[in-house]
Structures are given as C-alpha cells and as structure tokens.
Image (cartoon, rainbow, N blue to C red; front, side):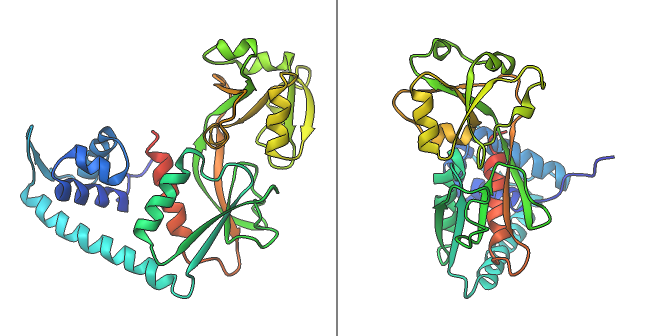
Length: 289
C-alpha cells in the first residue's frame, strides 16, 4: 500500500513564489518552470495539507487564513534549509560534478543557474571525463552523473530521473524524415556503440535478432561514424541537447525503455552538498512530467 505523498521544499518554494510574484505566470518565470507545473505543485501542496491556501481570481492571488499561517512557516523552513546547506558546506567552497558525455542534458544550464542563485558560496564546476564513473574513480570530481549501471558496492547513489532513448542518424538518412523509430527496426542497421560509457547494450534485443555493432571510445568518434551514414546510434535524450551537430538528426524510439539517470559518490567522506545536488536535479527531472 502506497503512503501519502510527503511535503517537499519545492512545494513551499512554489507557494512563496506565487504570493511574492502575485500571479501563477510570474511565479513560473521566477521558478524557471511552466505555469501548469506551478498549478500542479500548489494543488499537490493543498492536498498534502488538506486545506485551501490561496484565493484565486482572474486578476489576484491572496492567501486564505490557513494560507497566511502556512506561508509564514514556509518562509521559515526555506530559510532554515538554505542555512543548513551553508553551514554544512562551510569549508567546501567548490563542488566538482563529473560526467562522461552529457552532464544534466537539457537541464544543465538551468541546474547551473539555480545552483548559483541558491548556493552562491559554493562554486560549481562540471567536468567531462570519458570513463564509466565520469571521473569519480579517478579522483577528478566529488560526485558524477551517470546513465550506466551503478557499482553499488563501491559507490553511494541516488536515482534523479529518467530520459527517453533516441536514435542518432545522418541527416540525409531515409529515416530522418520519420517522426519516430521502433526498436526492432534497428536490428537491420549497423549500430555504433561506446561500450565504456554508452547507454546501449545488445541486451535490448533478443539474442537471435541483434544488430551488427561497431565500437567507439569517444562521443566525437561516435558522432563522426554516424554522420557518414554507415551507422546509427542509440542514446539518452541528454545527448540530443548537448550535441547538436550539422549532419546529425535525432529521432525518438517509441518502444524502448527509458534510461535511468543516477548521481554517484564515494561512500567515505562525501561532499556535504551532495543531497542538495540530488534534490535540485530530481526537481528538474520531475518538472518534465
């Protein structure tokens, strides 16, 4: 039996933004999300608390009696949460996040913007390192974003979201004119795979119906092979945002399981800001829903 949804800081940030900005539209701009997402978040908060928080008309938004009380408490809790992160990260003024290919994908810029706004005392650095742990095993970062299986014995981890799979192909390929591709169709093509850091394995197909495969070791080599038209590639949605190249077209795969996105970090002596990273990134992926 599923438990009742819990209260989250994002619910409180949404309420404060609506009241402070005066409209759902302006609150959405302040939070960097859609008006529909703001409405959904407020409704979720009202359901969790079991009270109506705002009076809404076509022109104004004002707190109810319960809303005034919740708003005051929300401001206090958000201040305390931000102070907690600042105190926990004293002496940790830099945070290095590694990744193999695509960082946070379409969320990368917004993650950086929100992080700077909320935690200006912690300088964020993104590091690309083409290894399975995005540089964590090599000691180059404090935590890493990965889209491949997690070594749970060696690293702590948090699932922050999922990304749809896409097919990458040459822009003059006959499939580039289509809106989507089926997974089973790919077995007739040659698939180019980065076997160290890529998200594609032959286990996606039955053993007797797998495509021919060529292997590469770097995103640039992967894209170059696809651009020739000899090969196609499968990848997570993040790649489509981070690697828009002339001669390369991306099309969604309509029947493939999504790619899980994890944060991983060393179990011993973790950076104090890790949970703040996980919470922010989880919020960004949830806002896609």
